[in-house]
Image 1 (tube, rainbow, N blue to C red):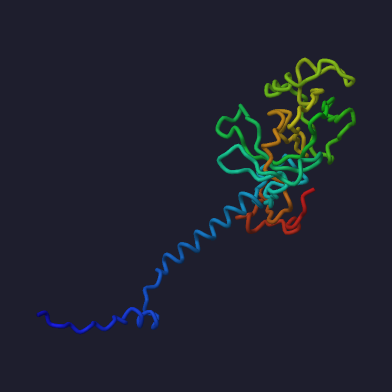
Image 2 (tube, rainbow, N blue to C red; image 1 turned 180 degrees about the horizontal axis):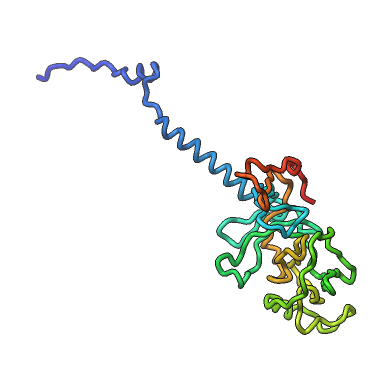
Length: 259
């Protein structure tokens, strides 16, 4: 006959340990990693879909934008681009004539190392517009559009540029503005008609700007945002100071709204 066994008392050690706070705690290292990853994720979402910083590397938009200006760009306006795809999310506005805009350039065959740079220029032509230039003066639908400021440098001599060849597909052989020249030059080209879904971009400093005259019209899906304001600026062009990004800051430009 088997001997009777007394029942075991319940093991209360785990309950007591938990009550005392002795339960295993997550690794502090893992908690720090999760915090860092969360911060990075928030940053990437903000940068991709809302606001991005952009640096001005050239003088093509002077005096509106200066070399060494750093801008915050509103990416929601024209619709943020989905990374690694050709898709844009809907924006709340389309590019308007006169907007300063950030966009991806059409292919620039003369610089194979960076054929699609991200640029900032001003919208000068909308879909359906007719543009031409005579003796260096831009005309939009027959109305003159002078350079927005008086340059303090002499205009270079008129010249032929092989990059202008793209214009032949859009130039008008006959129009109320006269025919397009057989060989377009920097100062004399067009008239050309901007097709649907495309825009003509130019720098404010027209003789220091490689723009739509050279590499063509910009598709709507290439737009990436509209600059809001200058959040930092220093003399990156001709400063004679050591470490100009610290010692030659343009304090008066910080906060300048881009128009």
